[in-house]
Amino acid sequence: MHCFPMFLLSAVLFVLPTTSWGAGTSRNLAINMTTETPGPSPALFASPFYACTRNFYVATNGSDSNDGSAASPWLTIQRADTPSRTGGDCINVTPGTYRANVLIDHGGTAPTATGYVVYRCQILDACHVLAPGGGHLWGFEKAGNFVVVDGFELDGNDALQTDGIADACIASDDETYGTGSSSYQAGAASHHIWVLNNIIHHCNLAGVSFNGKEWVYTIHNTVYHNSWQSGYQGSGIGYVVQQCIEAGGPNCYTSGIAGVPSSDYSYVPSGNDSAPFNAAAGIYGPFHDVIAWNLVYNNRINYNNPVACGSHTDGNGIIIDTFMDRFSNSLPYKYQTLVAYNISFYNGGRGIHVFASSNVTVANNTVFNNNTDTCLAAAAYVLGDLSQQGGTNNVWINNIALSAPNVVGNGCALVAGDGRGIVDVNNTYMYNVLSSAEPTRGKPPCIFNKDSIYFSCSNNKCGTNPLFVNATAGVAAESNSRPTGGKWIPGNSNFAINSSSPAYRYGLTQSYLPPTSADAGACYDAVQVCASANAPANY
Image (cartoon, rainbow, N blue to C red; front, top):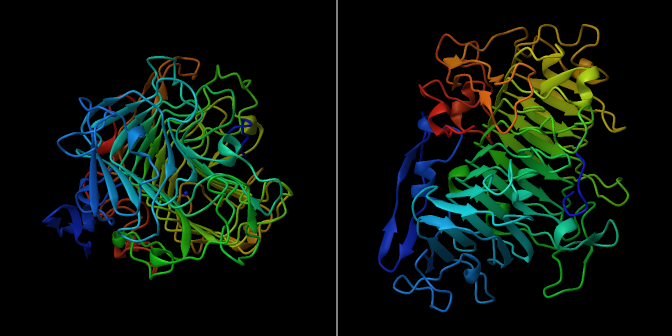
């Protein structure tokens, strides 16, 4: 479950396309995807799916009265957001600290390599976007569609306020920017947004929060220490109340609110939207929404949050939440969502939580040592590192879930059953490695309602330790198990596996997954260190 404030309601070689960075300059790099691990990817950053046809520049010694050329850069990122923006424009940001909120109103033209407006740090994660105050640190509204944000550090700023002063580090939502007046009227949230290769932390409600539209992608980021102190329920990465914009699509918007421009609806998919799946080329069809290759940890609702202890419901690592219209709560989102290759650990709530949402595929994720918040309202019943509550046609495949003992002693590797009054129907559970033994049994069981029929230990490995190379549970730095200000003692976080792991060659390959899915979990066995090298020391 997720509650919202009124303003803020997932050894193969790929050759990527040629990418232009300026006149006469191009690069065509091959990325060995056997070394791909969650968190920012230097290989993906060096050879992205997008291409630049025009380049503009921002620098800490620039001026907003300049023309934005390499010789005469702008001072602020916001200065680049003008009506002249068009697909193929790349805003190249010089490393340094930029203490300002960003709001994107002007985007690209199409989901193609040269159809996006790209905001790109010139050196991976060396551009520090620091919150000067409240609100969204980096937001998107109205025509802020077809935009990529690549290679930044987005910091909610714990120097101004403990656990962050910005509410969400990167977000688009109708509650902030303008709502429709019915289930069929689109609001001002944006679509076709890519969040790539960023480090996202210390925002007091959410690290990444998208809702109200679709076609959003959160890929290869590190997201930590978010949602601690807002006074609302938040999570590290949250996709909430998605609704479709396809012309004539089932349950989609049929009108938009007035404005300049009016909010998008009746969209006709094109370009990469409907091309055959090719993640290296930025093509994720048939999935409209993607959360993949992220390292997500220590997101939680702190015990001294204004939400009373005992009333916490979230603080999850990743949540897919209530994919139905917010007016009648009767129009389910009909399109597919992918949550894959993420590592989610030591979060206050679940590692991955699918709540009141359907048509979600959760594949090849690794979750460990979650549900560490002793104030969760769910403390009276079972909690899952993987959690399925209320949804149909969801697929859980090739995941690893190792549930560490929590204070309440009610943790499960996977919890599945009805939620929010929605009956689980036609869900699939295959080739998962779960630490819970016989999860359909027990009092109470981890898996219940119709999911106890859909799930079988004959199709999964139950009661099984995945034998990570070196992963141990983190613990609170205080004896009462209530960490304050991010003070906790981290465990080891190398989630790699080798040939001795029960996850080795246990996965089921699929057309929407790379061949490395022959292993269960987020870490291919050829990788010796998985995730710990990407984790900032300041948890």
